[in-house]
Amino acid sequence: MTPDHATEFKERRTRTWRSVRWWLLILAISGATYAFLVLGKHRPISQAEFVFMVTCFLVVAVSMIFLIRGIVTHYRCPNCNEIPMTGSLKVGLGGISYRRAVDLNPTECPNCGVMLK
Image 1: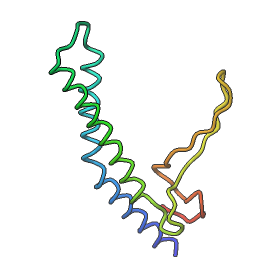
Image 2: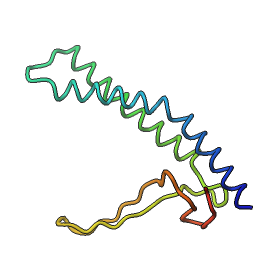
Image 3: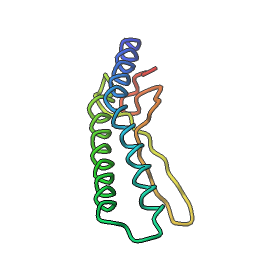
């Protein structure tokens, strides 16, 4: 039963990559362009430059929404249908914090324990 889950998860991971790769490229290009425009200006900007900056910002926002949608839709455990998440506890000068993130290379599902590799 485990190899079937691993194969299905591999296919789901491939589907996730195929659904988000163009949005990731668009995010990188528009984000770099936005950063260049915002950080590279030491003079007043024109109205056309402002419109271009707002457009880049909106493209970044839309591409992030589609990236998240692609991950939430396709990147799930075949057994429990949950997204493999990992958590980390951080203790520092600012206090204690707990962060959760999508586990991009899980060997097993943290929710149900099924082997994904």
